Amino acid sequence: MNKAQEILARTAKLLDEISPSKQREERKKQRQKEVHNGQGYVYTYDADGKPIPKSKILMEKKLGRPLHKHEVIVYLDGDRRNCEIENLDIGFKQNSPKSAWKCDHCGTVGEFSLRPASE
Image (tube, rainbow, N blue to C red; front, side, top):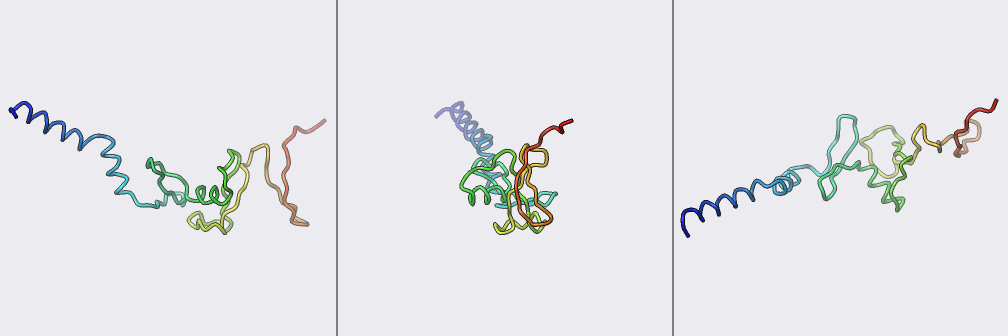
């Protein structure tokens, strides 16, 4: 092997070591399995290294389907770090066509559709 081939082989080896995919794998290994952000939510990482709320994963597993775009996770005790399935419930985004309501007198829960007021 001549000098030029040695240099090319070493360069290829170095480029392979610093490739973006190699660096991503190293960062994945260094990351923790769960991370708490500044707002109190707990995140886990998927296979691609993207953060996903742990509560969303647990609720989707419980429901057996993905959450709809108007659904949100509600923490019953108000603690966002408590991701036990008993503490999680489904709610609706505030301004969605479907919003949850609860009767103050009898406690029944239902849905209503937003309509413009008639004159």
